[in-house]
Length: 156
Image 1 (cartoon, rainbow, N blue to C red):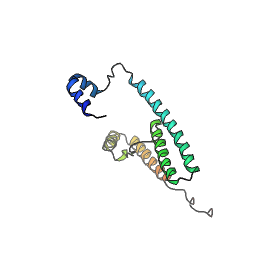
Image 2: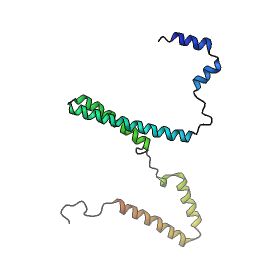
Image 3: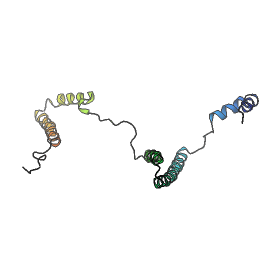
Image 4: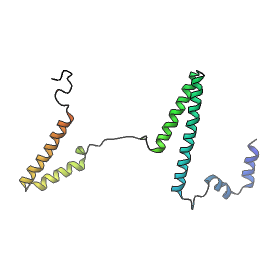
């Protein structure tokens, strides 16, 4: 079908308000978006599972016929299907993972300085706090080192 008559009809016979509404899509007022998201997710998951079943059937058929190229292409599609399913279910982490060392954070350093100042009039409390801090550092160092002799095979 030629698109020219449709374009002419749209420009000549549809009022601008209707064209704008058609461009904007359906009105979502009164729609329970959480419920819609849940049902759409369930539908998407059901379609992914159905598609995966068909892919596995095709995969078996390609293997039976010895079609290596088809097996490779279907394996790629299966991998993609499993990846999308994993993301949908939240089994695959998406994005960056970062580790933040709070010991170098300016707020932590500031807190330590203020704590040392606050404990200055109380030498016993200050000494106990220092003992706790150095003790936890020593425990972390010991925990991060392998135990002596653990790398030897002869048991010495």
